[in-house]
Image (cartoon, rainbow, N blue to C red; front, side, top):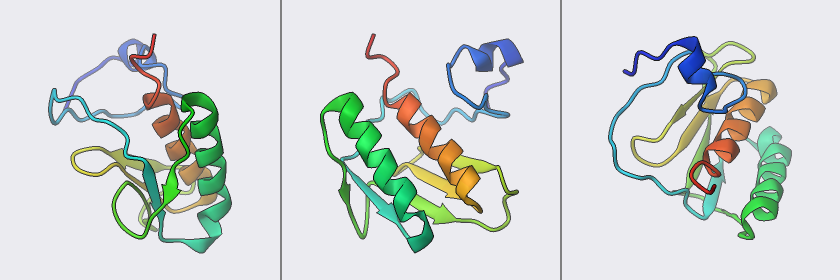
Length: 116
């Protein structure tokens, strides 16, 4: 786990500012060109994320039944909380629409890091 100060976490330019960041590898990760949503009520958020990704990168993400970015319902998380992992496929865990939106916003912001 990286022990970053609040100022250092803020410098990642993620909104909301992460409470905790775990480092797993120095290898560069790329966002796959598909997204998997296991919860039908989240489809509108998935579509909005795909639209924003296409607008920012010129690439339309495809909906997939496996692989890519995985959106996972995790009812152990609080309403506005999410967990984003990248130690394999990118996974966003959330228990609510709000948490999912925060997680998707972070994934979108991370997709632009390093683009100048």
